[in-house]
Amino acid sequence: MKNRILNIFGAFLAVFFIATACEKDEPIKLEEQLETWYISSITSTSAQLSGFVVAQGDGFTEYGVCWSTTANPTVDSNKKVADVIDGAIYHISVTGLEFLTKYYAKAYVKTSDGAYMYGAETTFTTLANIPILTIKTITFITGKTASSGGEITSDGKAEVTEKGICWSTTPAPTIENSFSTSEVAENSYNITMTGLNGKTTYYVRAYAKNKMGVGYSSELSFETHLATPSLTTDSTNSVTKTSFKVFGTVTATGGADVTERGFVYATTESPTTANNKVLGKVSTGLGSFTVDSIYNLEPGTVYYVRAYATNSAGTEYGVQKQIKTIADITKLWLPGGYQAASGYSASDWSPSTAPFIINTKEDKVLDGYIYFANNNSQFKFTTEQDWDEAYGDKTGDGILDTENDNNINVAQAGLYRITVNLSTMTYTLTKYDWRIIGDAVGGWGDGNQVDLVYNKNLKRLIATPTFVASGFKFIVNRDWQMINYGDKTLDNYLDTEGGNNITNDLGTFTVMVNFSTEVEADGVTKKPYSYAVTHWGVIGDAVGGWGSDHDMTPIGNNKWSYTGSFTVGTFKFRANDSWSGFPYPNYGDKTGDGIVDTENDNNIAVTTAGTYTLVLDMTDGSYTLTPAKSKKK
Image (cartoon, rainbow, N blue to C red; front, side, top):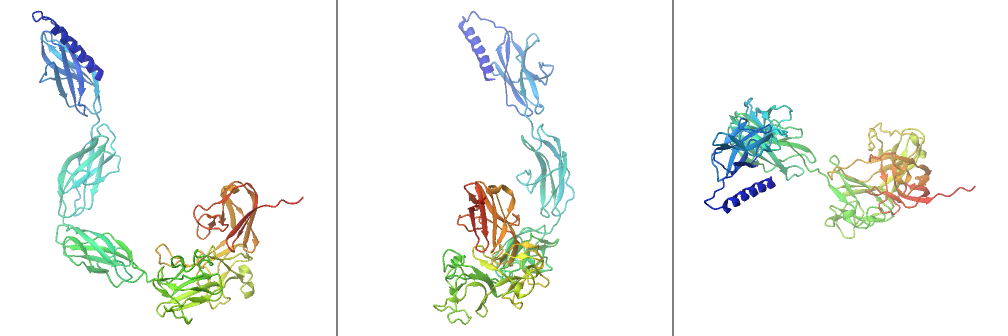
């Protein structure tokens, strides 16, 4: 187009210089000439066409443009006459064109003898248009809902990517206001508006989108009926063991005075005013409200709460919030000189890394198991993971005190069950020796019991018995009058229910019992003690891939062994051919210290290919990988 314009101007200048170079009394009359100059301002329905008179000859009586959707348009196709001619140039705006359509156009003039002269033909294509649509009648009007819709009469020759209706309490709503979309494929659609306020005038338009923009229908308006109030339950905070605060907002009256507002709560979902209710500090009207607190609740209990508001149309509720009061749970930490040797932390007397004991909602006595690796280990109790409040027992009478030099001494190494009653400030310290007993290990008598040993690295009691029948339990100190555990539901969590013998397969397995004090994600709910009956395998690209295990063989003394070919790569130990996690662990060695762990990115590396014997010792969690000895011929 640019080159064409330049050529036209060059021709114009050449004619101009020829004319001015001649004497005034010797005029040169040029042949009549016309050029279609340029096309601009193209839209979906219009364009601006221009003509340029190069030489007028004997004179023209009409100037204009003509166009058609087929080649070689004439004045018999479509034409428009110029109203104004600016020197040798005239511009004409052509309207009423079709969307996204190719047109052929020419400038033309009518000579004094009635003939038509045409400029060169040029083409242009209109743009696509925004969609054109109509809005449907407003129907099913209630206090908070109403229905409408739209019908797309033209997509503007571009794909419609979204359609719906929009509404507002002010005229000319757009999609910047409230809107709802339709997912139906048809051009005609219906939509229900929700969340409206009672006795309120709304303005509605249908809309549709394509790449050219958003098209809107004409506008309709309607008024909602009287409705219950609109409100929100905003937030809860200041949660204690027996109380919490809650906030709400009445956002619309519904068209009548709000005569009461407040909060309802219960231990079941969707509470109403038939449950527990408390009035807001400002108990009527529009806007935000709260209460000082909702009191006299049960510790560690889930409550459901909603704001409510009432007018002459009825009572409405805000969205439900769920809160849980703080459990009446206490932790005590046990820093002492045993921590490093017993596998709890790198340093001794460190409250921040010490193990803890905890109570439950049902039992207010704190309880837990702590392992002491050495005789005459000492410790104290702290109420937090610092030394601000610490308790010991200077006289050794089982009563806690804050005296100086009051460390509690544990004379004999082992696993201890420790309890603390904060009501009486008393504690107990009892050594527990756990064993497996039952038909699985030969019978229910003392002589059939299998000792469990404590692995301080894995924090588990370990035994590797050969099960000869099904059915076993865990017994402490060979005494049925003390605690004994089974698993009635076979979910790998220990319980003291009747009829809870643990069933098992026959063969040799490593039994792992977890008596560590652990809590759920909420930080206060004590996890039940658990166990796993495991067989072990080795898996990884160093032994052929991560798809299946190579079974290890029990070789006595809680050890498992595998001899085979290893390539350069990595491997892990996996229990029961499972990656599922609880109750079956998998172990690697992140630090490369020869002790297995459950850290991330802990694959064990093999740097030299060869035949190796791999031994896993479940007593302390150690392993060895040594070249296999060649058999003598």
